[in-house]
Figure 1: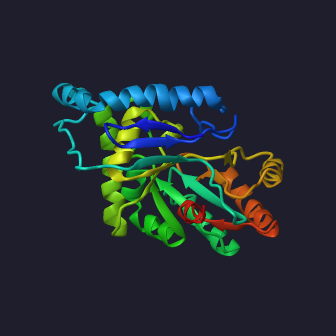
Figure 2: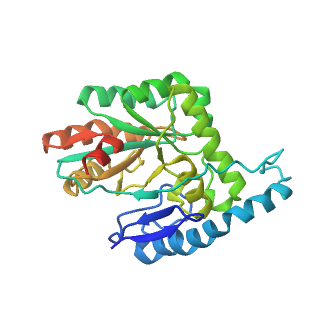
Figure 3: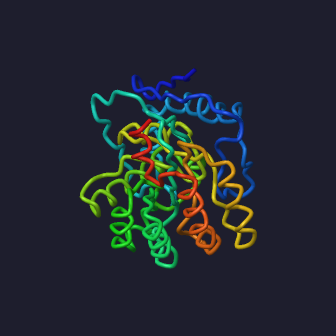
Length: 286
């Protein structure tokens, strides 16, 4: 049974129920890996609903007081497109009849890791989704284009903060700047958003709704440790299922562990009969 969340009257967010353990927190210091149904609903419903309802009036107040170093230097309230109606969807797994899995990469592009990831995908005949940070994309636009040719590009904020700790204006700036930059690099704006650490509080929902984004989380994660790569791949292959969205990383730190796992994981999934596709293609098949 879905839960409908109003996002600034009227758009609404449809958040389906999930099983415990389906969605984790990615590399967030001190955060629990398993939120569980109750924790997720507290974050996405209680926090998100209350903040979303108050977002419009709060934006004007924040604009008048955005003077700190982390706020907008010349604060403005971004315009709301009218009407902006519809549903904001949050996805971590897709119900599909295809034997397909989507592998996604966060935090890039990074010239130390992204080219090797792209080479591994090309060797396996796989496609993937890359959730790019705006700061990295601005430094390496050529890598953004290469990643787009190997699949698709999504928005992963500008500087990878915990958006739960920011004001709504700061959240807007993180998402809007990246949206505009990626649109300029690729000639078309992204349609998918993955907030850092899976944060889905109210300002994230309203910013996503303005752009017509689908928020994409994950159902399992490729671990980053350089040791026990074989065991991690064996676990992922044993629990693989149609419609999964797997999370890996190609930026912000040492990603050697990802590169050690990736060829084994791609070969194992292919041998098991899975098509390795993008999140967007997986959603289209659902």
